[in-house]
Length: 372
Image 1 (cartoon, rainbow, N blue to C red):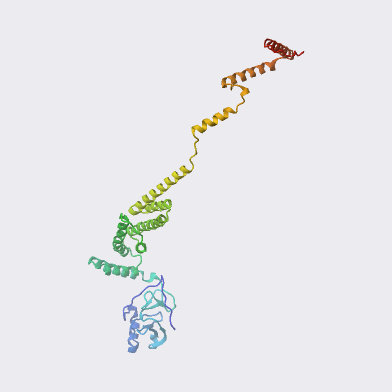
Image 2 (image 1 turned 90 degrees about the vertical axis):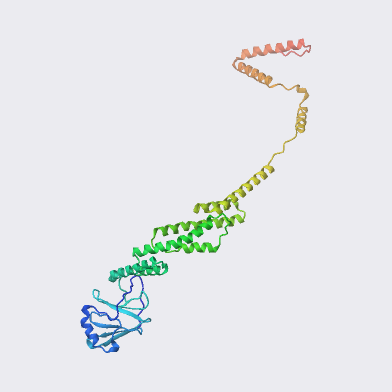
């Protein structure tokens, strides 16, 4: 049968030196020597039943029973050449693996746990870290980086290797980021291209390895990306003649990256265009809503017409002062009259009538006397 290939977070690589045996395997070694030469193992491990596992170069793994002089128990055929086999005496489990990195198998079709070989993995991680540091000291950054990455394959949380990788990557990251900053800080007209956005996006996906300066650098670069996006939006609105909206996006771009000189220039241009447009509109509205003022000649002519329409029989118009005195006198007379008795009102009425008759006699205009 063909065994499926296992890989995942719990898988690991376990190296077994060729033909190596532990002290407790002395009995098994004697049995191996008694096997025919064609059955001598290249990689081996012992099961709890002391059966021998043979891993050959022909992608085949065979299991033999040593107590029966190498009688084969069963065979497994792999898709890739086999590299090794091992037995964990604590867990009583046999492991074997092919040349696929990360693929490790057991006879029970289950991946093993990391904790089995944690100390060994830490040791290997440290060895690769030291080799990588040595290459870096010689100025061979590519080789040193490769060995540091290998160290993290064995122990992803190995802090010394992560720190060195972070420093190494940060140098390259800083140089590329500085070129982008110079482009934005220049006062030359800027046409945002897809290539510039692509360069920024590539840097944003740089692995940080939990190195604080590199993490901070990526956060700052994200602000630059937002500044460019806002600037591009402002350019589109500016081209469409929408000065107010364009001015807002240029300002937003400067909030993300205050050193963006060309965005500052375009913000000022958009404001000047907006101000001029508003001033022109204001002047136009004032001109269209200005009221028509009649001339002095037409005013006096209208006044004369108004005076000429007055009835000549009424005589000259009373002044305001005369009108007020007349109204006051009438009001006072009305008040006094309201307080009089009927006899008093009758006496006053008779007296007034006699006075009127006398006045008319003197005026030589006789009228008929009215009897009371």
